[in-house]
Image (cartoon, rainbow, N blue to C red; front, side, top):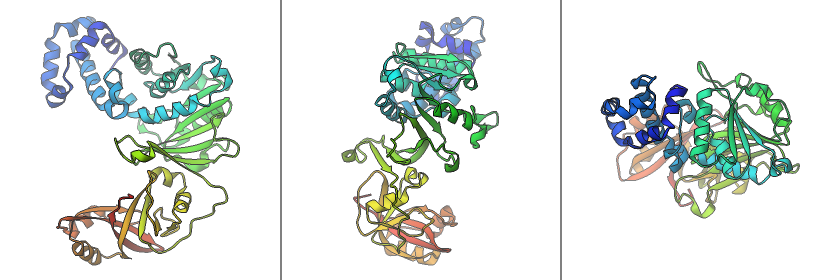
Length: 423
C-alpha cells in the first residue's frame, strides 16, 4: 500500500467506503467483495489519479487488518489503521498500557512540566498512543513515510492529537539527551525477514542503549530472547508474557528503573482472558532475590509446577520455587516440585500421579490404567517426538491426563499428571 492510496481512505468518502464493507463477507468471499468495490463509483472517486485496483486493495487490506487487529487492540481496532508489518510488529494494547501506566507514574520532572517524550521507531503508534492516553506529551519518530501516515491517523482516530505527534526521520540522527523521557523499540526486521542479532537492529543495540542511558528516564524494548549478556548493567530488565506467551523484554533506565535497592530482573505476567485468576488481578510479578542461591534439587513430590515463560526466560525459577518451598527436578530444567499447591498466574500446577523413567510401554500402560482419552503432552529437556508419542499411545477413555516429558541427569523421565484446582 502506498501513501496516496492510504491517504484516500482518510477522507470522509474513504471512511464511508470502509464502513460499508462487511468484514465477514470479505473473509468468506474476497473476490465478490473486490468485484463490488471495483464497480462502486465512490471508490474510483477517492483518488481519480490512482488505479481502481490499488484503491480496492487498500480498502480490503485495511478491513482485513482491522479484523486481525482486534486480537491486539480490542475494540479500538475498528477505528485504527494498520499496515501488515506494522500490525505484526506492534505492541499488544495490554502490554503498551501496562508500560505506559508505569511510565506515567515515574515521569521525570521536565516531562511533568511539559517537555516532550520521544518514541523512537514508533511504528503504527501502539506505545505512543498508550502514553498519550495517560496525558504524556510524546513525539514519535519513524523512517517509513507510510508508517508515519498510519501513526498520525491513529492519533487522530483515538482523539489524542493534543498529546501526540509523529514525524518522519532517521532515529540514528537522534542525539543523546534530545528527549528527557525516551522509549525506543529498535526495528528487528530487515529485507530478509526477522533479525535476531541485536547488533543488526535499527538502530543497532549499542546505539539504542547509549540513547537510553543518556536520558533522564527510558524504556528500551527488545525481543524476549535477547541474550542476557548484552543487557546494559544500568538497566532493570523485565520479561513480559501475556496469557502464557512470552512477548518482550523491557529495559528500564534512570528514573524508570526499579530503584537502587530494587531487583535487577523481573518477570511480569499479564492476563487478558476474562475471569482467568480474577481474584489475583490481571498482573503478577516475580522479582530477583539477592542472596537466594540456586534452588534445591529433589525427586518429584506431589505437585509439579510449570512456570510461565517470563519466569523461565528471566532466570527466576529459583525464586518461583522458593515461594512454595519447592525443588527442581534437575538443575538444568525449569520444572519444580512441591508438597503443596499454590494458585498463581506465575505458574501452572499439576498433581503428580506417576513419576518414572521413560519408556513407551510404561507410559502407554499408565495412560490406559487411568482411563485417559485426552492426553496433553508437555516437555522440557526431552528429545521425544510428541506427535509420534501421541499416536503411539492410542489413548481412549473418558478421563484427561497430562504427560510431562523431561530428563534427570542424562536419563529421560515422565510424569503422569492431572489438573488441580490450584493450576
